[in-house]
Image: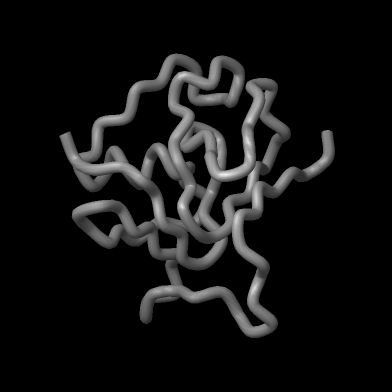
Length: 106
């Protein structure tokens, strides 16, 4: 399978915006989260106390579909669920640099 990337904003010419520790930042309505290398966006959100509806953790069902307001995510494997511009599937994508999601804790 080929790599897939969902891009909402153009990629900057410089290196992606990352925290001082080098991990991508995930901005939500109420927090800034730091992703660990090789973890899915869903795992990052869960580790920080966010509850996201999901069924598969593989991009098959689309239950975790979340608005992606800014930034870019990478899909290591192409998801089977449809992904529109301006959204992402946290269960199977990883943030590239800083991203902004329309999601809050609870």
